[in-house]
Length: 254
Image 1 (cartoon, rainbow, N blue to C red):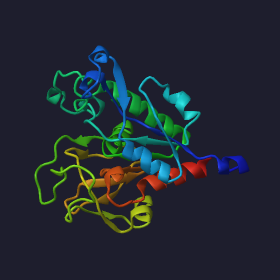
Image 2 (image 1 turned 60 degrees about the vertical axis):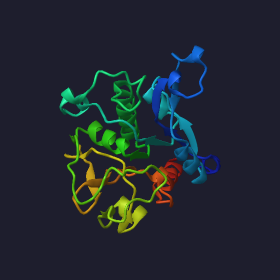
Image 3 (image 1 turned 120 degrees about the vertical axis):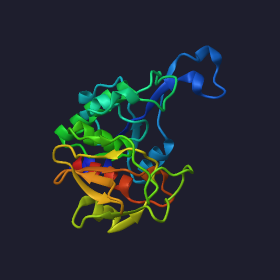
């Protein structure tokens, strides 16, 4: 790290969603068919507080070119990854335009985030995958997903929205000596808003945190600054350390 790079804050790229302006209440009807990109500002706030500079990444950006500039990559949460990306059952996919409903599958987003993840891994750019983002990381490396978690003793899809530190029974236990354990400690109660989960890990990826029912809650690539968490650190009431980890790892890479 040079003296100049020590003074320059790390640039953290954030992914998000794309949809038509008409979905925004109060928008001018004349602009209804134009498209907008968005991400939750909770990410930007916490990255800024951790000492990073958050930037929104549109699907149109060239992932290889982004790799020339970014110090860190954050693959955010959102809709399910299309089952075609991981060999799942495609019959569950509805014929709904993601630009009209940003909660449905979005192949453009999948393709962009998978390509960006590949660039980050190839160039050893620190990467954090959050919820869907953890699943994108796994799918990029050839892993598979559980398409719909069965009901069980631990609730993984909370009925209330953010902010929340989660239900008391949603305790994630982390393996000793892992990045996750160093960041989060031995155990952490977290929020949870997901119905899918990692089934088989992709190449090199290791599950390092689970809830008591065995659901994977954190993954990482040993020896690399690559971490995935199934919960939402940006919506924890407390600071769990995930976003600080990403900013710190990105700063060390400069």
